Image (cartoon, rainbow, N blue to C red; front, side, top):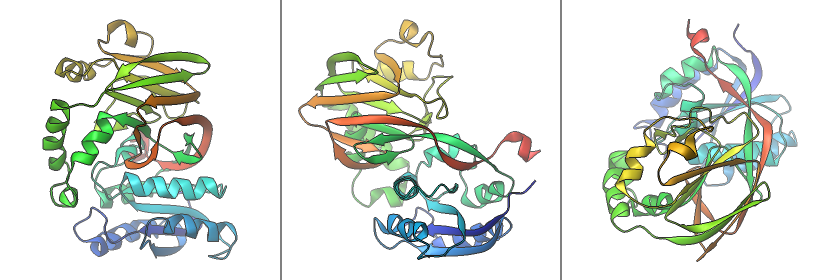
Length: 308
């Protein structure tokens, strides 16, 4: 049965990864009007605008009947909407429509990578609740990363991503692997301390990062835990090993070079201070504290049963 909302707000910005954002809006709104009695389309001109609009929704200054919000954009824009909803305790669901390079969390929601097809799927989607990470006061839906993952993103030349999309990351990845930065870390997970030296550390809530899927078969953004992955060594053998699927019971036994530590409360410090990537946005530095907020956010999710 199609979910019906009173008033939905669709956020977008003109620098979306879509070739023609206005043509894309037309295709998306065609579907969203089937599930919303009233649909507002809101341009986000500057970073932080979506959070401001969420504040207005909370105080009813925007409208007094908004009961769902949508985002047409990439992972960074999704992160801004998540922060707007969580920081203002809106307690309303969100719908995610892919409009960026990787669109990692849309894969977790079983949505198509095409914005038009994904919006059509939202018509028959259902609500599920997902965990959210709180990182130094910022809300994060998908992942926290430092080391190679940040170094790789910074090696992508300014403006090149919009032109070449995923292709721009290939040359960047090779360049990064040839000259990785190593750092010392102290990671405490649920009271257990781990120390060492690494070139990359990733803390994942969702199973998809950077266009690929983490091969931990029981990784779930709905279990009240996140998964820390420590890359002990930097080598191409590790990259090959990453593609072998396994579960959390045997990961550390069969995986060479990548330690897996699940938990719900994490502190991380490094020497030297390292930049931190959160859902594709590099705007934090170590040290960081992470708390998992279980079942904190309602998101429209598609399933194969609904497709049938």
